[in-house]
Each structure stands twice: as structure tokens, then as C-alpha cells.
Length: 121
Image (tube, rainbow, N blue to C red; front, side):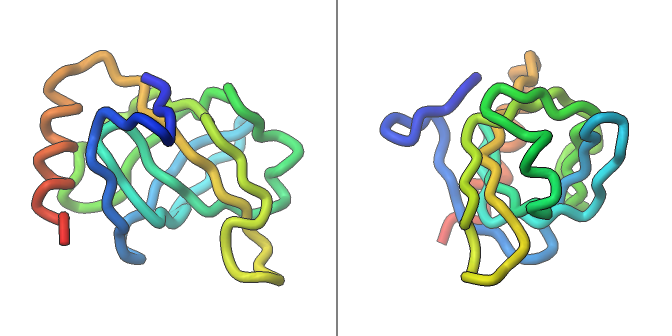
């Protein structure tokens, strides 16, 4: 599922520093990548700018895993849907990635949506 900012299927909430993900890019594993927000359909991550040349809209993130204790520990396929060069504070060496989860499991989406509902402010 690719999310459109104008019409989202799932609620999205901001998350704290304990929400991170891991994935591989060109065979290199990147761990503890911080998230700024989360939904059942995807998330927004802050990655090192050094990855900018490798990541583009449509790029499939392999070995994608949510690293939070309360989230599923199953590796899922995910796709970059947005790349934002200056997603954080000026001078920060990170860029923002809008990521869509491509799971085919209705159980995964239901579990994620229930978790996000508990976080909703």
C-alpha cells in the first residue's frame, strides 16, 4: 500500500526515541534508525544523508524490522514513498524517508493499527 498525504487509510501519530527500525540498503544493515511518526500503513524515518544517493522514491527496503518491544518482530518488505532532504533541524546530517509497509497480512495491519490507537494523544 502506498500512502498519499492527502488521503491516508490509517491514523498516524508522533512517536518517541524508543521507536526505531532496521533495514538493509545495498546489502548494508542500518539499525536503530529513529522514527518521528508511525501508522499501520507506514512510518517516517530519519536516516543519515550519506544514504541519499542510494534511496529514492520506489526503493524497496529489504530486511525491514520494527525495533520497538511492543511491535511485531517479523521482517516485512517496505518501500520508500517520499524522500525529504531537510527533514530535521538545519545542519542535521539526516534526511527524512516516508516509508510504506507492503505487508500482505491483514493481521499485521490490525495489530499495528491497534498499537497506534493506544498511542493517539
